[in-house]
Structures are given as structure tokens and as C-alpha cells.
Image (cartoon, rainbow, N blue to C red; front, side, top):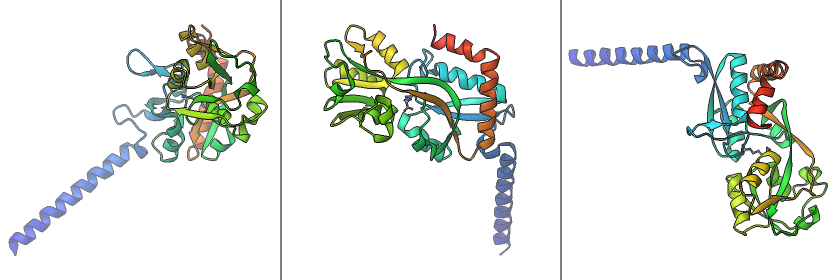
Length: 271
Ligand code: ARG
């Protein structure tokens, strides 16, 4: 009996110390967003580093690009340490909803459907879709894309346009008909499909289109005669973090006013 009491007492001490430890931990890291060493709050941002020059894998194996530099500058403004989480583009919104990240910077276009799941900051860049074809292609106008095989990066606005989504009709002025869409994980994979002759065209955002066209100038070209409407890139923020959204907007404005935004633009885009 005495032994039983002893074991019981020991167990109680153990349980108490474990819960005290847990309580201490909870005190220093508010919902896992605080860096215990420095006390600086961590801002977890998702991206898909397959979208040059906005985001790509740098030589050091870390995501680099315009968006990465911009969000780091925003982090500095608002006193948070930015931690980049690289993932598939189509997983980004879900990662906010499940609380794994607080925001997204990924050349993401503001869209009503996405607005149901996330909030968007003020716009930080204007872009548009471009159509890439093989050099010998006779596709010159929007109608030529009907019934064609088109490769895109899955879940992007290029995907919506290629698929004839009526919400995205404004981009080309018409909804494409009877297209066969190959949805790739990476924009570059879509370009490879085109080069290898497995598809007739790629629809992708203007800046990566230019990068891919330059890198593969012997095989592919941009169809200059197909012009698309403008879309706006913004930072997506969790609907649970309205204060963060405000801070990001204020920081964006500061960076535009003090020239830092232009500096980053020159470094990555307008070289
Ligand atoms: N602007 C397009 C969209 O919002 C494409 C973005 C792709 N971004 C990326 N990092 N892969 O759907």
C-alpha cells in the first residue's frame, strides 16, 4: 500500500511538471508565431517558387525573386521575421485556411472566388496572360485556340482562361471552346510540353512567359497579336488576421513612397 501511494505521488509530480512546462511554452510563443530566441514574431508566408522573376529557387536552394524580396522588406517594416514555405500553387489557399501559413505571395491574382477564402492586400503589380506557341505555329488570334491542346500551371488564372471558365472570359474577350487542357505542377513543365509537341500552346502570366520565351528562343515564341486584359497581383492574408492585412498595406505604401519598391523592381524585373 505504501509503495502504491509513493508511485501515485510520483505520477502526480510528473503530470504537474509536464503541464507547467507546457504552460511556460505557451507563454513565450503565442500560437507558434513567435521566435523564442529573439522575441521577434515570425510571419509564415507561402509561395510557389516556380514563377520567375517573382519567385524561383536561388542558387543557394532558397526561394528568391521579386515577391520574396518584397515580403522580406514588408517584414522589416512591420517588425516580423518572414519565413517562406514553398509549396504547390494549388495548395496555397488551403494552407492559409488550415492555419499552416498566414499569407501568400506568389504572383497571385486578385479573384472573387479566392476572396471567399482569403483577404487580399492592395495590389502590388499589374500583369496579363500571354500565349506561347512553337515557332512554326500558325496560331495568331484568340479563335485559333478553340479546340486546341493547351498546357497551363494548375489552378492559375491561365488554367481558368484555357478551360473556358466564364468568370475569366474578360481576359480574352471570349470563352475558349473545346480546348484540351494539360494541368502541370510547374509553369516550366507546361513549356516543356509545348517544346515537345504534346500541346499547341501555353497560357501563362506575362513575366514568366517572357522569361521562358527568352530561355527557349530557338523553339517557342509569344503570340504578340493576342492581347489579354490586365490582372492585379496582391498578397493573400488569412481572414483571421485583419490587423496583419492592415500592417501589410501600410508597409506596402511606405515601400512605394520611400523608393524601396522601385529598387526591388529594378533588381528583379526592370533590369
Ligand atoms: N497570376 C496567376 C494566378 O494567380 C498565376 C500565379 C502563379 N504563381 C506561382 N508562384 N506559381 O493564378
